[in-house]
Length: 147
Image (cartoon, rainbow, N blue to C red; front, top):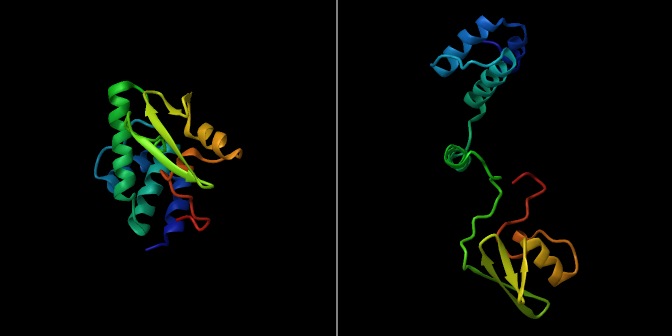
């Protein structure tokens, strides 16, 4: 058996008919009606997933959620969009003072003013650019090591 890299490199020389046959072998279903480039990409992904592992459960759930939203509304928001219920109160202490934010439909309220984003509020509080969700503890900072 050849290495994974060799198998993937061989995809570039395959005809559309050969790619469709390999798709059936890899996925155990008929190839979708897409061009050879996308067939190659799909087959390569499947080969890599078998060797290195596929999507995590959380990622599969996020994809399923996006598909459901697309079918229902015809649009998909970013998976990084926050889902905070209207009426939720966010509290953050900063330099000895406590700040409260109320989540509204389509925005936020802080100190009697309406804001479109948490980042605007974080900037108003700190005077510096912050990720609002991170400032309010809704998202952790990404590790520089990819974790």
